[in-house]
Length: 257
Image (cartoon, rainbow, N blue to C red):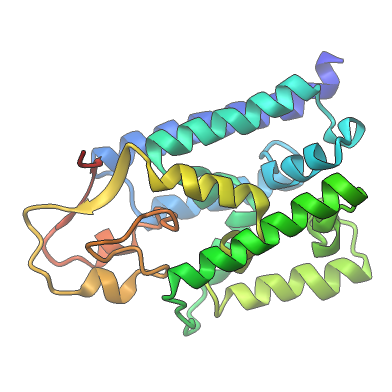
């Protein structure tokens, strides 16, 4: 039993360690998008090796009460989901940004030199996301329908090249090159919970006294979370705002009371 659950345990340990390490590096201003690429590739590769936690899928299986497919004891699965929620509440969405293999694949696709369509209406994004969350919950709890199975995610990371994978997941990755993280922002049921945790996160990227209001961070932020009044719930800590700032005016600090 211990050996069977080893990949899940290693994956959870990997997630916790990466979140804390990235938070510390960001706080010390030693983290950048190039270093982030390393973690994106690692999490994608570990996703194929089952050492990077697929928590959106685990959350879906919990809704279905499918303890067999979880591949781990129910308490461990719940503990993993709760732990990442707590860490997101403290440090922000490092899990979505760099640990979740589903998010990592989309982020890598977004790094391709293709002009993206920026969706700035955050209220609309949240409304669509809530709609999908309710749909996931109703279909899962009432009708035992696994909605995530229709996205070909399990097929992709199990290297099962079914028609569903080709049509849906590949299409999702292609869309990710022009629309930033479409699955994370509009569909992922666990991602919605993490977005609300990030809304009140203790540490956030924010402007400091060096800011000259040049507007570069706002112009380049893929989720429009660099504005003064931004809630940060859709901030994936991609570090774009920090890297385009000409005056080192972005820092990772405790949220003001």
